[in-house]
Image 1: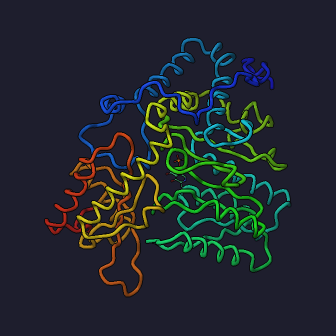
Image 2 (image 1 turned 180 degrees about the horizontal axis):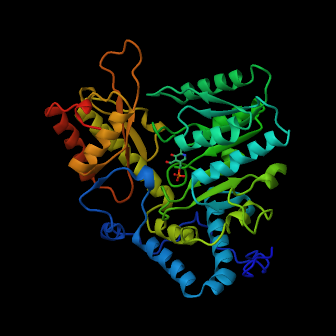
Length: 449
Ligand SMILES: Cc1ncc(COP(=O)(O)O)c(C=O)c1O
């Protein structure tokens, strides 16, 4: 572990101090509406920000905690490195372990984001092909609605190494978990047709676009029954958005961002890796001095950089515990309100939701009026920019290609989010913007690229 500046001469801190259980709410006094406003007063007040799903949000108290960590480093880097960093990261990992009900803190690593976590899981596939443990043509399965960056990662680490990637086609709009389960089973059967092994299934917990909650527990169980080697749940939107009990879910790997729905600053995510014989073959893609010391330790030092976003997890826990019911309460209320807002918008526009309320989380897909003529993905980006620039509404839009013979199909869906800082007026602004576009006979093709 020698390094030129002597930074790595010290042995690992194993952190005997046990932080409190992050799941248990230690209520002092519940946060007031004014305090919520003040926590998010750095948000541009002129913008209806109904897209928490893309980048999350970070309250002022957590930003302040982050700045304190940053200053600690800048004030006395040597002391920070030797005395503060490892125990601080361990405390964050312990807080996450408790939140997700993992058995052991060694199963929890903190990484930058879900994209990095996917790279960690997928690069072990490349080595398995290269070292002859997998045969050419062995299969990995993922959802058709897997996140674009994760699909690229599959291309880079699996297809290029000799694997075949099968996509599970999913219907949208979707009306039941059964539809998803049926398609998933079909894809596994197709994957095994030539007698190849299915080495990995990548399953989203909450798909990004269109956004739907996937019945992960059921799909993981099917994978086990069908002999799939490993299961990776990409829950970039997991913690704070859906129930996360990693033992109940039963996957080998589970990642969630902390900067999306858990109020951490960008960027921080965890990767849970269930203890197994294969555990030691997981490595951070950025190799540094800690290579070989276990993923969690490797990930806690990937060179000199700002680690403050990973150190503020306990501050984010403190923040959520100021709300009634803690993170569980926030999640429940977000879900209830986003469903109400989605129904209000769909009713006003004469459209429908992309899935039943129990298949959505703190985000929901709302059909846009077909007269807007959303005809391709480029149209969705143009409309998104138009809404942002002319109406001060931030919302992502999904293009759905119509089925043959469909009459007056909904081809565009807005993905609305709800988070604690949102107000009814945010959704009313969006409602009125779309109604104005409709009454002006606006169409997407009329916008220049
Ligand atoms: C399902 C899914 N996976 C992965 C990601 C990537 O997250 P990040 O950009 O934080 O790495 C996202 C981002 O929205 C996502 O929705």
